[in-house]
Amino acid sequence: MAKKKNAKAEESKEKEEAVESEDKAPETVSKEEYDKLKEEFDTQKDQFLRMAAEYDNFRKRTEKEKLAAFDNALAATVEAFLPVADSFNLALTSTVGASEEFMKGLDMINKQLENAFKKLNVEQFGERGEQFDPQLHDAVSRVDDDELEEDYISSVYQKGYRVGDKIIRHAMVIISN
Image (spheres, helix red, strand yellow):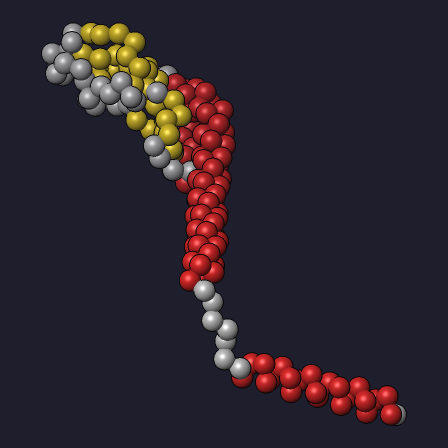
């Protein structure tokens, strides 16, 4: 019991000394010491700001990379379906003499395919009458067409597709002279 009282007495004495030392006026520092501490503080602050900026840049870069990875995966998937869409469009245009029910079924399937592309933000381009753009179109040949001005699409072999700004496939076209 006496040990406990002694321990408590020592503890309260230490607390009093700590309070007294806090009440004392702070020590003055020399100009050299102050300049040295300020320089060290400025260095630490600069390092902190640089690290915060690096982290922010890293966060932004990884966000862009994540979006780019999604766009690339979407483009690759859509590209795999383009031959099917081309074959289907060819079937729609070459069904001379087919029954009305058959044509109606093909048309329904075509609309489903177009809606699926629309949900994925896939756009078709390359129509007759559009101005030729080498960024979007591959010119296969040139023909004389009195109805169109020079460098306009006269006919389309294969439609082009894009997702946003990313070209999945260029349109294959014939342009007018």
